[in-house]
Image (cartoon, rainbow, N blue to C red):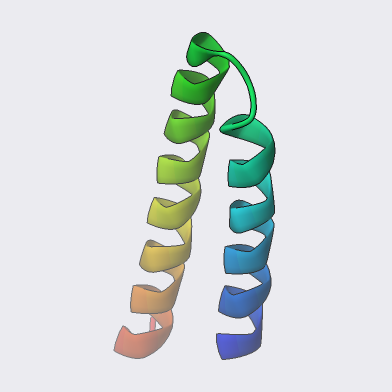
Length: 52
């Protein structure tokens, strides 16, 4: 799971570099995508920790 989290974080970081190089509207869209991505990773990690 930790390996998956690190891959996900690296992918999000790369996406962030692409997104934040763009214009303002793309930054907003990218921020929303990043936020949902982190939320997915967090909920996935919590599910594993709680054993469901």
